[in-house]
Image 1: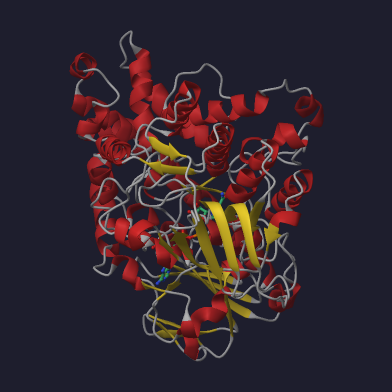
Image 2: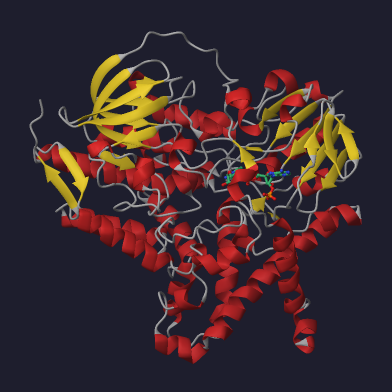
Length: 634
Ligand code: NDP
């Protein structure tokens, strides 16, 4: 082992131990309960700082389709409905405009680390040319506006309105949607597209409301206080001492702007993110305008192919995301016999984290595994991960001048334990005299006082505390979405899902007719989230179109289809737990308590396999697994 370690430049055993130690010091018994709900005394954290509240009278109306959520999922659903001739729909959105996560997350530096040419949906339909390879929040909001304009979506929108309850009215064959505005909206169909990162969360730290200075969450950035815009230039902070709590993907993007503007900046870190290079570049318009029809889907699928292991010659996106998988591939290839494609199937499990022993069998033949050797394969994947993370750690050392700060910024966990980040200014920010990294070594802060933050016997007096502490992911549906759904026979969605998610294709749920869920649960998860939302909107409009043509008005998953789908999800996802348990806590592994129920996962065969399954299902044209009827209601 010693000789091997010398050759490769690191000792795998030492790293394994270090990863375990770092994870163990962060494991806590309270899991998701360490976070506070932004309710009651904390409700001010979710008030909309971007628009004035409009006063309006309650609406009473009946419509064909209600879409809950006006983010990318909602506007894609609406655009595709419009394209298929459905015009009688409403989009209910709590923000003052469309945008969803992009409406709320306008913090300075907010940008998307998925290539814009694949992240922006409907690019061929709108003819929009993103200015850069990686886009930012202002351009994304601009593009969302373009989609809305093209499909006249504003006329169907009910903004500044929060859904409070959705109830099935058996006799009417309609859903009743109640809102915080006293509306009574009834719809034949409801699409729930409320986003997986919709509800901000706060750490349950003593004293948050004692703080006498200014405070806000990154998803409600207060530009009145800081000055500037999403592009930075926070001129009002030049005489302010600022603290930011959290160093996840959001903090990584706004810290460089805070560091540039604030008189003093204190960054309170619990776990460092992995920071790779970003290398943004301007769009070559000539190249863009010459792309052949069909290029957009081809590019999205090419990207997805790398992330899910489907063999292809050319890496069209060719960035940090695909590089990770190309590297793994290159290494494993060296031990491959003739059946190289088997390896790609295996890699399909990587992104969905099926890479422990039993999971391999989903992707490789037994013959092949015995040829290469199971342990050998696992070791190779782990070694590539070690190598990649060693480079990430070396980068922190190269860029950051102070050796202690550099050491604190090194992430010790496997790359996909947390969202990988790509940023060219973040690490450099710690070379500023005015910026201090307060490394809490996995503990988090002790308390918040009237004057600032208390940690390890020291009070850091500040004017402003910014919470970059993320969003609720692992809490129950009603807490995250803010509303309950009551289906047939008074069955609530909380009750239905109390022991784990139960759906058909992630979209339908027995007991909840004419309901469509958007999101990654039991469906095709991808880092390029808009791609899966687009696929879901295509699926939705196909089903509604087919029902309309056949004169049907009622659709519900059959008991058998739902049961089989849950079994498929369990079968495909059964080995995620071992990897997740090895990870440092975060929302990817339910704060260190991996979902004990394997059914609470996306479809484990990977997004492309899922999309292709849905495409085949549509092509068959028989709406298999759905009970579709033509009912007459009172
Ligand atoms: P995260 O949940 O990723 O990060 C929350 C941060 O708060 C973590 O660093 C966490 O530390 C820290 N934290 C929580 N509690 C405490 C505490 N008590 N004391 C100190 N620190 C604490 O949220 P983000 O908003 O950063 O990101 C959420 C997601 O949004 C990303 O994963 C990504 O999917 C998406 N996003 C995407 C971007 C893109 O480019 N496409 C950009 C920004 C966000 P710890 O790690 O120890 O839990």
